[in-house]
Length: 326
Image (cartoon, rainbow, N blue to C red):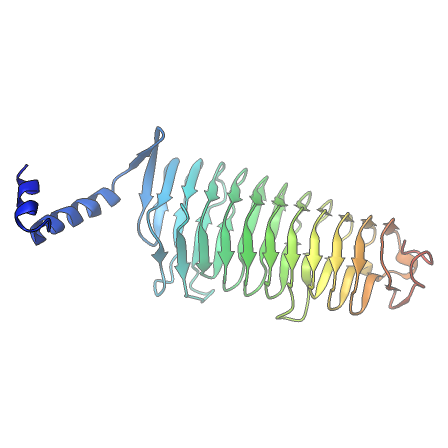
């Protein structure tokens, strides 16, 4: 071939025109669908790109959206799978009045999946308002407000890292059937996981939840502000401001390990009665390992917990084996 012969005459160095031709070819290919294992992967190559039809999408390279004050990627169709393929979608913009979510999936959608990469910065890292959708294998870090803001029904977040959010790591609002499972949720300014705005029947299980609420000096690992029939179970919570805080009635904290909380380990406010706190190990808290705001624990059920210090209605309940905290 002439190209091979030309390279040989120049000491195996291609001409600049050849490099230019190859570079143009690669640029054109980057904008074309990629076929892998029988799937058509549609490239995502620009900030603000709209994924408006069902299908498989892939982030082609790291993408920095700083200075645009726009969403990184908007998902507007059901049954979209967005593979970040190990790449990072980032923005240093932080103005809630102008918006700017890293990845946004609208309400009314179903079957959205976001997986396998990093979202760094933005106002909110991932906004998941669709239903029956999943975020997995993601790192979400440095969001101005929420790492993940979740609404809808039957969504899940698993095997992900959520860290360094300016407010809450994961905020669940007006939602039901949400599963937060097997994540590392740490070093967020206010709460690791918050449940609010009449959110019922949600599950926070098998997570590592560390050092949340330290920056703001309030809240902490998991807080249920509003909602019922939510379950917090089998989590490890270390060195948060508060470990678990229940402010709404009808919720359960079970089989959690809570160590080294700055303030309270597990705290049930007076307005949260009746709630259930069972089979938790809570030790090393700065104020009290376990605390109930209701006189004589109200209608709360405290059973089979391991702890050392306690408060009921603001005064000591006498420690393990004494009083209503058991």
